[in-house]
Image (cartoon, rainbow, N blue to C red; front, side):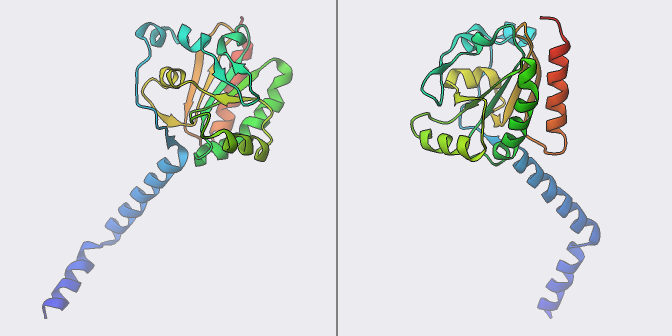
Length: 202
């Protein structure tokens, strides 16, 4: 008899409303999980002056980030150009979803003077092979390398989810920042932000 009572209690607990609420909540959690990954870098804050003005800190601009081709990538070298900087990692699912869209954007905008840089947040020694394979798999034709830990931390400003993309105007201001990737909306928003940056005077 007690077993029958327990069955009745279970049936009463899983009402149609509770089932729908559970499915919706689970769907939201899955959507959040698939839109971004969490970087291993500990959170940190950028200098207050840089955050207020939307200008990248001098330490970020002048840092020598290791490039996949063996040279270095310095963000400050792109001063006077519209620049998209993407922070990513080979193990990050949303980063892998986003990369083909970034390749398309690069092909579309490079003739108009837009530069693009992809900086992995991984260890450059441990991930050298996986980054090389990634570039080959996705036919990445823009600059690829590894962000120095301090560079990634200062750009992320405590929000460590990846991918993160920064649209930087000719005067060095970050005019848009994207965290995560939504295949329905992010490509269009990135394109609009690049168009906006191109329209602004240098």
